[in-house]
Amino acid sequence: MRLLAPDGGLQPERTRLAWRRTVLSSAVVTLLAARLCAHEPLLLAGVVIAWLVLLRAGFWRVAAMGVPHPTRLLLPTALLAASTVFALAMLGLLTLF
Image 1 (cartoon, rainbow, N blue to C red):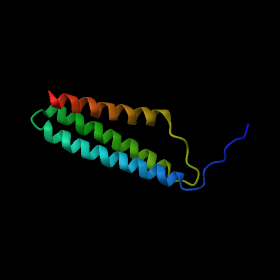
Image 2 (spheres, rainbow, N blue to C red; image 1 turned 90 degrees about the horizontal axis):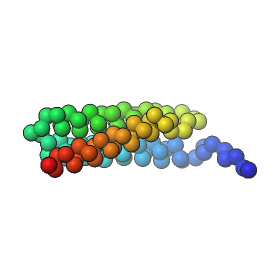
Image 3 (tube, one colour; image 1 turned 60 degrees about the vertical axis):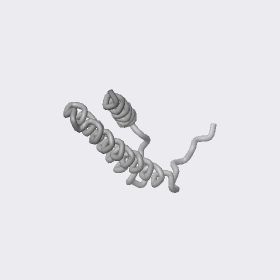
């Protein structure tokens, strides 16, 4: 079995850019959802908090990718990001009703 060497190429840069795109696109979704649920302060707070959590998770991952030998994505960070994306989707559905 051949062990793979750590990628010294552009993979960390692509990962950083992907996290930045994810946070940016979630900011757009947050702004659109905030516009729809401006009359519901609880929903608005949930949307903003979910976006801030995703922003923090993205910041952690971008910072982790900034070192010469980045670590793998940790399970708590992955679960945090996935749960906030799910929460944004559910809050978006609630704004429709």
